[in-house]
Length: 298
Image (tube, rainbow, N blue to C red; front, side, top):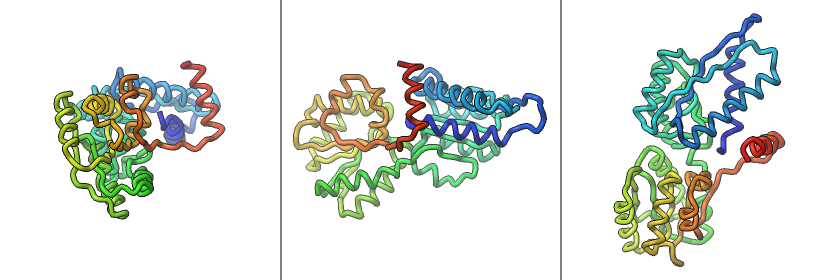
């Protein structure tokens, strides 16, 4: 995960806010809305536990203890909203960490605003969330617009005059489009059409969209979707013949930051694509964390 270190910062922040003035141990309820049972949820929870252990072991004078209450969003927007409401009403949480997706975050921001409970997301990257202008929403990650200039630089370097965005049909996919369109217009690059793929698209529907793309003259594509969908997409693209020389594929970090979650067949199908990836500056703390993580989970 690209934001493991940020989790520690926010737990430090809220422990500072809730630190008691007496010697009694004070528990502070914190909510964590996540898709329970998924790999990214498991990793996130491990990071949270490591952060809490590190914090309290190095600061024994603190008399507060953050109690993490998990709400299962069940891979669903409504599920995320229901989990947040339950945590606020039944657990009286002071803050909610999560959820995983931008679509889920959109709903939770509204709930946090009405309940005056801060929402901290370390993975919701859609720029459209910023437009909600909620004082109760904190984004602990880069938004997707941060990568458009890198994509623009690649396209400008190779002198391509037309590109086709291929993106997922939800808040995450659509959120990058205004900034990407503006960036491409700055270098006079035309977008003749867009290809939108449903999150729940079948293999047949994906193949149908790819066949349409094959009939069009433009051969440069920018792909912005979840890694799981991208894997299926490129496997079909290779089978149809869209991965041959002459075609150019550029991946956003929605895919490249999560390549480890893609199986061997999917990675093989992506051979030859370009991609931009989130850069995390090296530091001693980061190196120590990675070494520790490798020992715990070799």
